[in-house]
Amino acid sequence: MLKPLRCFLMLLYRIWFYLLAGIPILLFFPVLLILTSTERLYPQFFWFARNIWATTILYGMGFFPTFEKEQKLEKGKSYMLVANHVSMADIMLMLRASRNPFVFVGKKELVKLPVFGFFYRKVCIMVDRSCTKSRSGVFKRAQARLNQGLSICIFPEGGVPIEEDIVLDRFKDGAFSLAIDHQIPVVPMTFRDNKKRFPFEFCKGGPGRMRVHIHRFLDTEGKDLSCKSQLRDQTRKVILDCLLEEQ
Image (cartoon, rainbow, N blue to C red; front, side, top):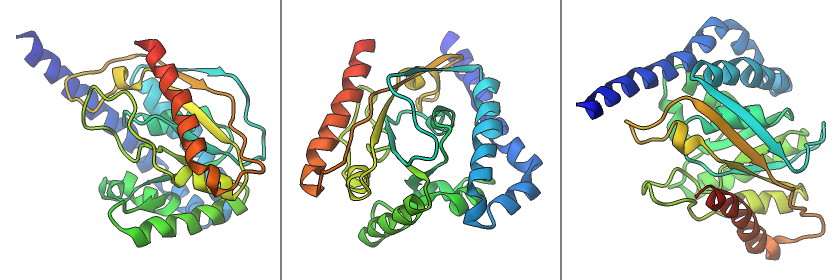
């Protein structure tokens, strides 16, 4: 009896999540159209996404972000932001984790989401992981954004692991190739609680703390692409070790 009741309450909880995600976009729709009309206004769009949209969703769901920082981002500097990917709330939490404007590289399928997908297509770098041409095009668009002084965020697992017992999936190379190409630091972040707070398993989750551990940055200065695998594995180990502490 308890499990059906919990699943019903979680259904309402998830409907509330989508309402919180959609209502700010609908309320500010004309403003967002202007802010997404040119790349020059992207910092202003980022401010809205971080301070209004993400904040409304996180606190409206009863999620309380806390940040443990081993090193701080410098204003006006570009970074490669990477984190473990376990929840739809990862996007909002990443927005709260960085004051420096950044652009997400994400999967093309999110374009299909009502309302959110419209702006996602305009401001994010989309990748069709089944298409080699699409993956190579991501590099060109990401390079253009980095040249504008922005940062890039990639969840290097490439998606959320289907198997619940996987703590951290394999990392793909793209984030680390870009970081080396542009000689920008990699910023590993561990989202400690997102899998517990708002997982993809339908009947699980609930309000509480969402801790983010921002690790010391991994420098790419002087490195070339022959160091790509080493940088990828080093980044994954930093995040994995932090997740295993929780267990």
